[in-house]
Amino acid sequence: MDSDFGIARELSDLQKLRSQYQPQLPPCLQGTAVRVEFGDATTASDPSGAHTISRSFPHTYGQPLAHFLRATAKVPDAQIITEHPAIRVGIVFCGRQSPGGHNVLWGLLDALKVHNPNSVLLGFLGGSEGLFAQKTLEITNDILATYKNQGGYDLLGRTTDQIRTIEQVNAALNACTALKLDGLIIIGGVTSNTDAAQLAETFAERKCSTKVVGVPVTLNGDLKNQFVETNVGFDTICKVNSQLISNVCTDALSAEKYYYFIRLMGRKASHVALECTLQSHPNMVILAEEVAASNLTLFDITKQLCDAVQARAEQDKYHGVILLPEGLIESIPEVYALLQEIHSLLKQGVSIDNISSQLSPWASALFEFLPPFIRKQLLLQPESDNSAQLSQIETEKLLAQCVEAEMNRRLKEGTYKGKKFNAICHFFGYQARGSLPSKFDCDYAYVLGHICYQILAAGLNGYMATVTNLKNPVNKWRCGAAPITAMMTVKRYGRGQGASSLGKPALHPATVDLKGKAYELLRQNATKFLMDDSYRNPGPIQFDGPGADAKALILCVEDQDYMGRIKELQKYLDKVRSIVKPGCSQDVLKAALSAMTSVTDILSVMTSHTSGNTPF
Image 1 (cartoon, one colour):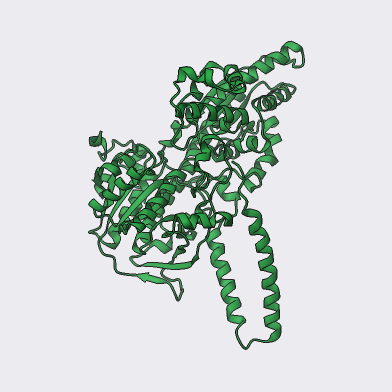
Image 2: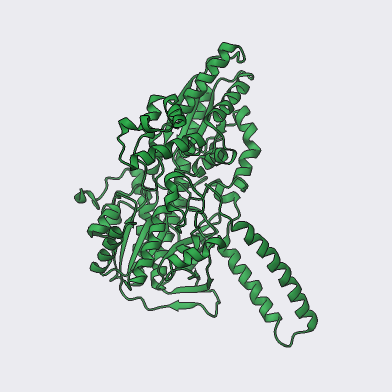
């Protein structure tokens, strides 16, 4: 009920202590003046989709990057904004709850009040449904008092996570107009920020004065690109899950008779499973991206697991811990195809009871082969993006049953001579997403809230708040804003229901890079993890002392400082311009032309190789 929103929480002693923590701000966000440097116009990361994106977003495509500068920065063409009239800003939780979300509100409120105490922040109650219905709560310091550095989204709540249909977009526009909003902040992941971009374009087209800003907040960690290094909530989720996994590892090593199959949240991408593996060192992890890349069937995965169990049994080890991302089930080719048939029939209005009889012969055979509990779960209505309800499909139980059946067969045939296989299954997801956010997520979310104000003060629309250089201390973070359209791609390939979105620009979930440094680190240690029981327990989240400043290993091993490199490149280009001027020597001019020719040839080849679309 609406009356439940915004009420003061009853806090434990630890919660009270956390509510008193003041997140840090990088130097570029300190003070009352907004200093912004605009870069060159942006383009699409995939050149083949640039025309489609620019045509779909004529008002918001090609906007420049924005870098926010510290007071001591000497940038001649920087725009310095010192006048800050009172503004009205709305904010809405659109994605699934993710630890740290409340701190975005806090950071934005502090920034608003520092620059003009008369500015107003309105929170929409109940997510996007509250936005459409114009249900608001004015956010004040008193209301925020028991939500600072706390988990969940319960201050405002959330419902559906989309602003997509004509009716929804019109309702959002009407709300912003009626409430006289200067800015609308949308907090969420890939889908929510795609909707934010479309909303910004529509507002610009209809000359609505409200500026739309997106904030990357999702526990899945899949809103990653050249501008966004990680998402608010991912650090916390992985730390909480890693502790739970490590506790299970210790239990497995103590009893020495159970295999634990643990499914982790994360939607289609396996970032959470990969990070938790690197933190806690379970015996195995099967990433959805590996399965998709190798086209592994359910039989292939079962055999891989059984071979691992048998190899450990030969060392007299009858226990283990296996991690599975929830998106794994959709990466198994035959199951994915089955899901597409089911979703197509559901869309046609076929009742659940009649679906089995209307499947194609091969799909019907697979459906009948699967255990009854999986059949029931596959029949659930798909999500708004046409994917299966991954959190409801117990892949861990399916694989545990398949492995048990195969190990029993091997035992009966005499090809396996060890002890009986025993499995225990878990799903870790909801336990972590309401957790107290880590110090990193508290700081990151608070900083993003401040950046939202800076974006609005600079008059920008259709941008996402960004921070790079995140693996370093807060005082070295680079704060900026990037057009959401510059993060978009256009899918050219697809199957089944997902094909309906082909050709439409969107933010797409970033999957685990099987050529990246994080995955390489996993491969280097895979055999050791499998056979040596080198379990590692990072313990609970630390808020002070040793471990408090620890960050996700994925973030630390990847070298991602894109915005920093853009600025570094600009310095080199400026230096070339200062040297190669009319009047310079022939030798200097020839050397510059030769070098530039080589560079442009190389870059042309590289961009042509990245322009092809590949199937998911």
